[in-house]
Image (cartoon, rainbow, N blue to C red; front, side, top):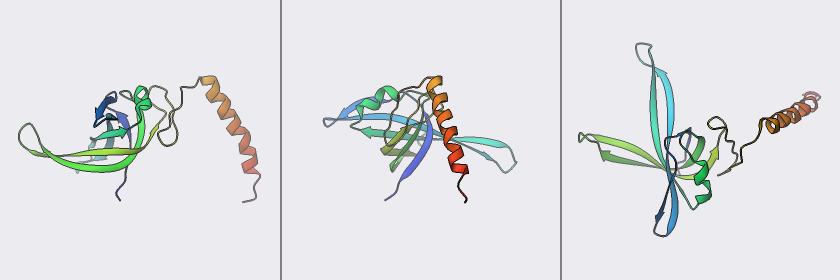
Length: 143
C-alpha cells in the first residue's frame, strides 16, 4: 500500500459534492518546497495535491482557504493534457486522516480528522503553565 502525507495550506474553501448519493468534500493543498538551483539561487516549488474526504460534511466549515492542514491518504497519480497540449501529471488523494494545524486563522486541531474549537489566549497560556509544572517531574528522573 502506498500512503502519502502532506502538510500545507488549503488553496480554496472545501467544496461539497454528492456523488452516487454519498457526500464528498474536495479541496487542494499546496506543499511549498525551497531549494537551491545549480547557480546557488534559492528557488521555490509548489506541488498541489487535490484531496477528497468522503462522508465528513462536518469538516466543511473548518476547511477554508489558507488553513494549515496535515492530510494522509492513498495517492492517485493522473496524467492529463495541458492548455497547449503538453502532457502534465497531477496528484489526487483520498484522505484517510486529516488534522487542522496551528498557523493559519488561529485554528487548532489534533488527531484523525480532529477539529477543536478556537481557544482564547488565556486558555493557551494556562495549558502552557500546566506543561511547565510537569517539567520538574521530568527533570527528577536519574536517566
